[in-house]
Image (cartoon, rainbow, N blue to C red; front, side, top):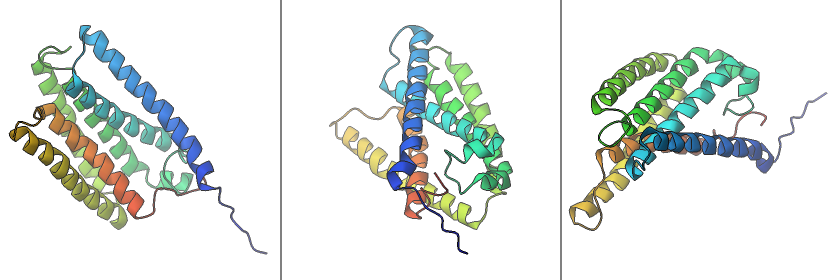
Length: 217
């Protein structure tokens, strides 16, 4: 007797994660933008809002990973894994990574809400962001010790892709600003580009290896 595994059509495998991700992303963005308005009763500006949204995306992604680790059966339905057993096997690595992402996202949101004309004083934002980044860095190093060869190669390639993304977008923007064609990027814009490019790089390298659609979703 042979057992045949029937895969769902691609659109059926994608529809629920896309709808769920879209709704969650909207709620996260809506929540941060409302928080920024409540903070000082005024528009924080494009740089701060974009930086905060990128930070919120990091925090949401890390939180999603932690939920999947705590409940592997549920996490296997929306995370990019083969099955719940994979989440159980990688519990340590994913836990460290998830917390690190939340902390990095928190640091970016904290910076977006700090400084002149924002909700928090600059000194508070600086101290808080540095502390969060230091802890996130330590957790990332610990997490790296629990990765396999494929994951390490994927991570290295994602960082390489992120470098080229920042070089093209950030470098092109800086070049045009130098020639007075556009306004130059603000310091927070660079931080947002660094953070966002890592996510894009990771997504691209995962897709390039054919790992985006795994499991029974």
